View: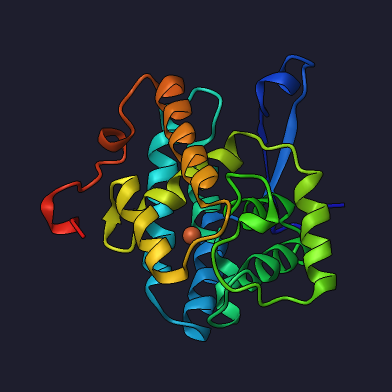
Amino acid sequence: MLSNCTILRYYYIEEKERQKGGLFFMQIPSLQQAEALLGQARNSNPGPWIAHSKVTADCAQRIAAACPDLNADDSHILGLLHDIGRGHGISGIRHVYDGWQDMNQMGYPDVARVCLTHSFMYQSLDSFMGKMDITDAQKDELTAALSKTQYNDYDRLIQLCDALAYPTGPTLLETRLVDVVLRRGCSRFTRQKWLATYQLKGYFERKTNQNIYQLVRANIGIEYAL
Ligand SMILES: [Fe+2]
């Protein structure tokens, strides 16, 4: 039984499953609840990640609005909460684990899902760029959950928007990709991860038949040049 505060929305999942006639309900909080959760997290751990989350949400809403099979309002909520695990403090992969755990425990498995998948456009836990600040048991949990997840377009959308979202606004993928490497370093999967990110951009450009930078109104001027 779902709690009263859970909004049920249907969404069609990816093509293969849609062909089977699948109709699924998304379990996510309302916008008001999502904003309250983000506000609580900001009080616990203020930082540029809050503005980054809002930019991610705005990008997700704009791209989803151009996709007939995606819900723009739901996408906005998923974008707002994809990094909610950062409310526990400054962390590396722990923010993925904490967000995934918290959202599942609150009865929002579809938010938990993007908390888990947003950092893994290349679907391997070892591709994470940053501190592996979780226990071996927690790593095993995440590895198992990630490997059994079949990505849908909401996963892909938040992965792309996360890669577009500078705290000051959407920007070139190159700017964000390099920024992340400078802050967190590389992994042996960096090249694959970057390639996967460009593939995501191409995927949504074909899906929307629009240029993604124009769609999200990215600022690609010289003020973002490194
Ligand atoms: Fe993020």
